[in-house]
Length: 144
Image (tube, rainbow, N blue to C red):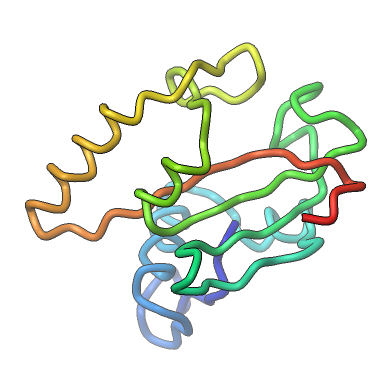
């Protein structure tokens, strides 16, 4: 949910506001049947870290919602954090990865940086823009 843009009518480009990369992500979600407006209202934004070239990522902090995050996957005293941008930076921040794209503590395994570095290199060599997208939880009492 690290998106600060708005799609045009029917998911189109006319009337769209935002940078092309974010609009592409939002458009993919729209055509996959995700109702972004409902998602944003269900898991309201608590805080955000705007993108900076110094740390190469953007992050948003949200209240956890069982229907989105899975019941019992996020402790009551934690927020959910979504981070996106430079995959090289994301690799240095992560110590686990989801197995088979599934969420929840029982679906985590140690991250395989070699695998992800190879995938980033392959996609980049084809001229594609590669983004890292990560999810984590932080205690509500955290000041970080």
